[in-house]
Length: 442
Image (cartoon, rainbow, N blue to C red):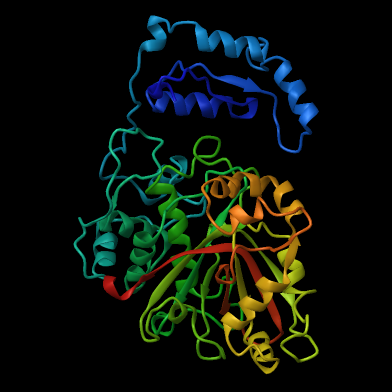
């Protein structure tokens, strides 16, 4: 704003005092003027918010409006004009110590998930690198220059990914999957206060080659490949980006259990009556593919009951009712046990697309409810102002207009996994981000 000639002063709530000051310092403005309000502002009525603004800054005890005016009109002092970006050392390239002491070094420096790791010795890292066809020095992401330590875009190489794969307990033959994940999406944790997480879906023959579990206990701790590949995503998020520092770059209020292995799912293509997810995304059935989903959580449901006709509201009280507890700003990842998927086919939903379309059209809310959601205002109102559809229509139609819960049928995705011991499904409040080939890394 000031580069455009508009004087400005940042504002945030008192809960983020240290974060805002740290961020300003890392961007070269250690004495930036910041005005604070009481915390929280979430859930407050307009009169309550107005009273806050008319009150005092809880940090400086100065009237908020007076402080804003003074900050905007008082020239910067010589000290305030001083700048500079904080440079954080990555430490030595090699540590030499006992295994126990190295465990402590990794743990005390925030480089683990606070479970024991496999120490990435040069021998183990070299062995991991032999599991792929690329140069150890190949950059998977180039660093962004000049924005300091807080950047969410640290650069990293194949070798650095290998270090984290070793730490997670991966075998060398798992490494192409880890590299595909690292190349496909934004590493790191959500910085948001909402405690988001991710999910990883694997398709293709590599599921059986690596012994991935997609049967009984498919989403539990019952296979080394599932557990360690999912864990590697967490460790890469902590070590290859600065996104995992609580109170600084990570602000998730309650955190998320899914972050321990990122809700790793291998799709059961053999027992699924539907097209595999990667084929839906344009890949060939024989290709090996990783797909990344980002969102919040996952919850459990049961059964696939109904009258048997495709027009029946069989899922309105099951999946549909669960959709109403989700943020429509994300999509839905529905993980069906094969028993559920087969029953749905018997009831007329012979394709995933047909079921997604039905759910999209039959899970509705009023435009008024949609627009009163703080999440809709934050995430989709800016898109509506840009004229993006369907958001522009949803923000301008009559309040009693019924609109879908999700922006499109394509935002409702299905995968199949489970041991067929019971007709359960689980729903992740998550959007598909992108899919990437594993084969190119073999």
